[in-house]
Length: 275
Image: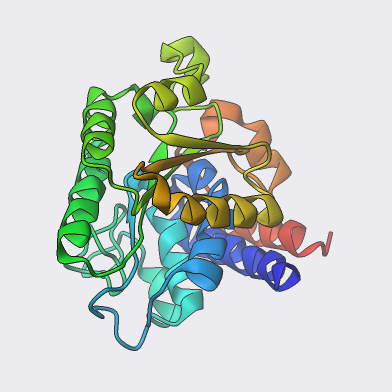
């Protein structure tokens, strides 16, 4: 299965490059860093049905680091929620695929996000509602490491632990970079695992968050922790821009940068191993 997931990750990365390259600019670095997580969740773990996207009791995913929206769209498209031709409308007039996820516009999106920190609070609320409804769903949330400098993240984290939301599994995309510089230089969040443990969470630290085997094992372990009455934070040590060497090498410059269709095409060849 994981061999198929690795091929799927290539497909998702190529679709990210295609839609951002067609638009000409986008949050490419933080989209490429979360591909393995999205592949594992949507194709291996989540209880969802693209033919019935509002299914009662379904698992939900909240992308609090909203600028990774194009990565979510590429994943949803590969999962069958809508056709790949829609990816070419990214962030254009009349699109169903705005820059940041919008549950009122995009089939398969469970929560509108964008303002950093707010999506995570929403995910905690969804998890509480699911627990009260006893619908058996697992709620997944993705936050960024730069986003983790927001106080709202920690308020929500404290509340989730106090309500014993063991149905909540969150992920930090710990790629160590944000728009201005490294996370450590802007406002260091280390030691991250110790902080989440202090807030009453189970913590799983994944050495390589761009390895599907490690990500898959971490998600399974997190789900096995549901009996602990604690939410779980999975720290994914990732590479911003993973999969395309020149984008990785841009460092903080790959947070939001111009991408021509020619550059996108070259990146796709690299992802496919054709160069």
